[in-house]
Length: 70
Image: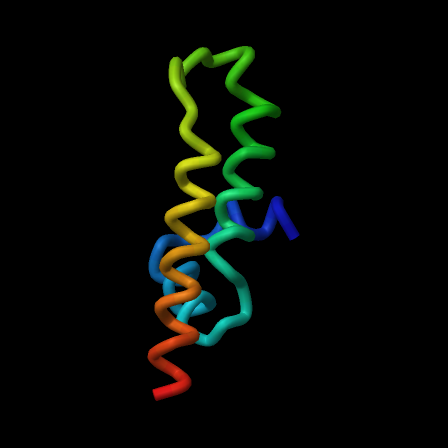
């Protein structure tokens, strides 16, 4: 699934997020896997903040759950 996620457009990803077919954490995990696979060759990302991204994603997901309950 990681390969599929990194190949989709932002519009496709947004639609899948809205339909709850994937989560923000799925996208972060896919990005992390891709970075690990290629960054050694391209050295494009000097700083990664994946923990912060995951924390933010969890907070967004918690807010969405609260909205659905109301």
